[in-house]
Image (tube, rainbow over the protein chains, first blue to last red):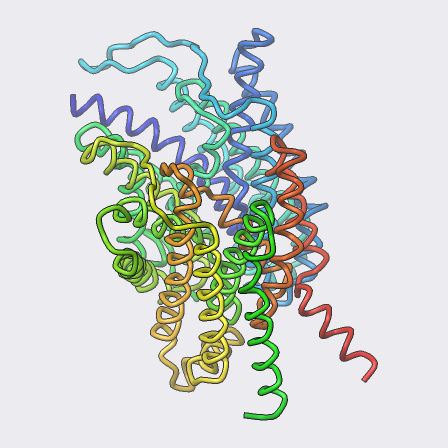
Length: 290
Length: 305
């Protein structure tokens, strides 16, 4: 029983980690606090649903098709909607406030569009819903597959950012945008890329989540919130921290849901958040520099 | 007190007296619109009381509004009305103090994130409590409080918000808050206890939101967590305050009146696309009128001089 709950907690935590990695790119590199982030996850989940039950296309193919679309969409959002704010902002704090406000508006627009198309009902589809036995515990095949794919995507991102030239540039912008400019890094392009990459990641997470979770058009806010909590827990801009924090959150939520009460999972999230704020506000792996 | 200020206070008193007669002149529809406008005036002014000078965007308005509404729903039949309002105030002070003490010591972004999910958290906790402990989801609010009485209470609350806002603007606390908004590090080095100032103001501003919720509750005869903690309310308050301008006490009202009328129209004409429209209106405001109508007016007045 305990092992089984842990296993499904790890799957959920893997999703949170993936979602948070995208957000930490957007916030840590592009300095955009994106409150409409979770809406893209739900939009991707709806896309996967539509592919599967409408067009009979495997969600795994959706996983190849949807993230590039989200990448292009996020890139356009950054260039058209957010870059004017970046230009206007005098300080980093001013940009933070402006981006919070603009993306808060965007949240309601995207959510409104999804509500108009799909309504407020809960959706799910059945894909690979076969039980597998692992060391005595049962786990659904779709959950396990989602976890493995999340790990693969996360690893790919990690190596992309640490082993390639452009990844190094993106990390340099995260550390110090002004200094990065001095060593001839195009900060604007790097920021736009990081923002778009974050969008692609959350869309990938959306497709994966849709394979095993019931979702509705209002759920984006919850994912945004959890991603924000994970990012802060892990330390802003820190991919490894996001991974650890995501797993912790997934595990705690699952334990609370199974052993205490499923109605208190969000309360558990908040309890962890409060604890982090009180004990280690710079995050598990973050350095305090402000 | 200068002559100009005396004139301002006299004009405000006349305006309140005229507004107090509104229920006697308007029909049911007009009165409900007026209640809407006054309640949003209280909420938006209370919002900008804290978020204006400190520049900490609070997304938790409805968390406190809902706490007030729910307190009324639970106690209105068993307790006297002033006691209900007192309990609502007490609950909101405790919640706001916890939130403020945990987040306001840190950089503003933690506060924003915390407030972003606070309404959802309170909603889920109330739902959990109702389902598991009282075994009722949704309550009926039966009182003999009339619409006109609600209007007068809200108007009194609005006068109180303005009076307190006016007082804060001229007090040491107001000066401290403006210093924090300009540069928090400098403020701290000048000997201001920034955390205490921020928490005090946050608590004060949420008390008004809670009272607005408590007073508004009898307008709905039925309340459940999804109605009381509807995130659109937080969003609407934020838009109104920003459109009006948060750096002046009278700013939010300038945003409340046109937007309350616009939303009334949108809700009637496009009930299914309401949040899309509101989102678009909001984005336009953020891009085109970042300093609000009050900022525009002042800019126009200052230019010829």
